[in-house]
Amino acid sequence: REFQKDLKTTKAAAMLESCAKFEETLNTLATAMKEAEEEENKFVVQEGDEENVQLKTFIKSEKIKVTVQVKNVATQMERIKASLTNFKLQAARKEELEVKELGVKALALLKAHQKQKSLSPLAMFKEMCGGTESLSDDAFASFMESLPEVEGAEQKLSHDDFKRAFTALDEEKEGKISSEAFVPLLWKVMKVVKQIALTPDKSMSDTTVLRRLEEEEVLEVLEGPVVEEEVQRIRVRALQDDLEGWVSVVGTQGTLYLKEGGNKARVVKETILTECFEIDGKNPTTKKDTTRKVKNGEELDIRVWGKKDATGLTRMKVRAKTDGRVGWVTAVGNTGIKYVIVL
Image (tube, rainbow, N blue to C red; front, top):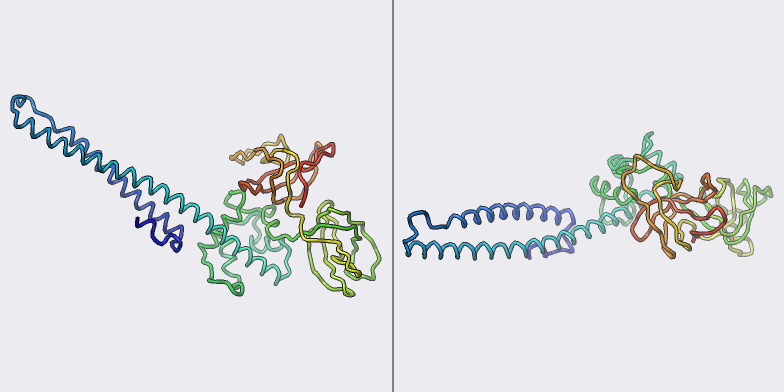
């Protein structure tokens, strides 16, 4: 009953700590129970006392008392264990929610810093890593502590809070985050809804065309928006060929060319989620098996844009929303069949 008090205000860490202490008490009690059972077995009539009716009656009576007490305690222990198991499940769910919330707060801080410094996601990653190839939880927490608070934030997060937030951002649960995993957390992408020219300069007067952007293409926003002749212009990278340039979001007559989107996808034909880019590839450094079916209708968060493998399959790295698994799926088959569409 004490465990159930103030569940809304008690932090998951405190709940788990209470669980650990109570489990220790239960283990001590279990040892005492075992000793009591051993003592119970000692209540026997000794050799030579078989004819002592009074002694036999006493021993039998005492043995019954001890047996009843042991059974009563055992029943209470089973009830307590069941309550403790339920409490631990509540604590685990609360920990998951707290970590998710901390991850959201940490991302808000990162995006505010990114906007203030006009940094690309990759530039942010390099600033945080300090020259290393991956980001550790400690390096992440130290960097986050150095950032100014977001206006309106309830309270300043601690070093341990940021380390917990790191676990929410470490989607592949490797204890470190690579640039490939980090960049999608901060990138801003837009989807082409009407064919438009990609130009080398933000100026509307420059009529040079790098190429035409087709409908459904996805673009990473690198800079902007800036206003040129009353038109919003942004610098982008076309994800299908990495070509960079400037494009208008809305035309002079109000025509919409781009809209937010392109970082999510939906399965339209059942396929499989695999650990490696190559379907038959093997990664000896990865112990967990993430290969599973992804069914029609499942929604995915895109982590690495589609690229072709040696067999002509267009492969895309994604995070499945249903269970959080990260891996590679075939977006388009080598005969043109679509398995995944970008939303």
